Length: 144
Length: 274
Image (tube, rainbow over all chains, first blue to last red; front, side, top):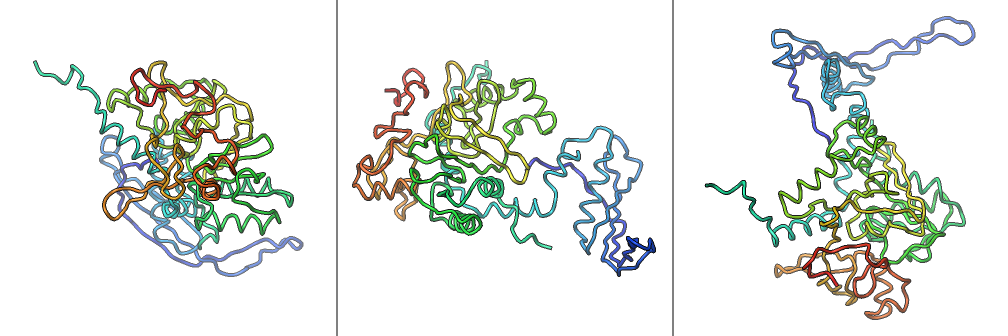
């Protein structure tokens, strides 16, 4: 919705695994193994910005519950982008939390299936008015 | 894993309506003006099942109206609440990418970029080209997105008797317009905000004019027109082409005049000027 940073990383490694889930028993205090849980981990590398770090590779890392190859790649890219000293607004926590949570963003895409004919009608009204009354050429466009 | 109810556009409105609605309420839910659309019908059934309220398609009978991007043609009263669904609550987003900075701009009433954007539209296109979601100034202080209602509906918010609540679920933002509040579309002192020009369009079902119409492409390449507000359309159909017999007073009268004289302005020489 608000644009994206220009990042094209290389995937270093994607790990899909089971991790042991261990919790402390509330009464006895002993560690209890509840069972395995699916985990994904991803690492990407990129030179990222030609100006700032052209001679270096930077590492981005992300881990999620479940086996989500695309999500850990996306998360790793975000991890790298958000460490920049003066990040673009699309690389700030505020932007990322608003716009890239997977359920949210899939919902935003699904919303395009809802009817939009009133909004479109309003846009067409403007296009017609501009077509009927084209703006006058200003003097700066004239050649001498 | 998929969320059983995807975070689509109406979630914010739904959260507000479910919070407000009790068993005594009578709700009207419409999408793009239509009560019958799949989205509106599903929401209406869901809200009624969750709250035990009754439902209606008649604007004048409803206590709470949940709308996706229209305000009814009939005037709302002070005992009614309008709930507008909002996809993008930040009017400054087109000029300031960062929401935190945009909030600072609101705090300082720093709206220079917004005025500059409008001025650039005039220079490049000869008129304002903002379609729906036309930005408004509330209480002469805050620039606000009125949600993607068409410009036809924007002036209806000015000094309105009813309470309007707007909610963007995805962005977790809720805001409201109290009754009897100034809500003015952004415009210059010599170049004015204009509603969509549907003045020549006649509803092919009811014969009504001077209301917001849907434009329907026909097989021969021309267009047919139908009232967008289906609740109003059903009243118009009952009483011939004179809906005044069964419908309440409207924001725009039968000749297209807005109910607050002088609020909508026209440039010299504009054909729409009375």
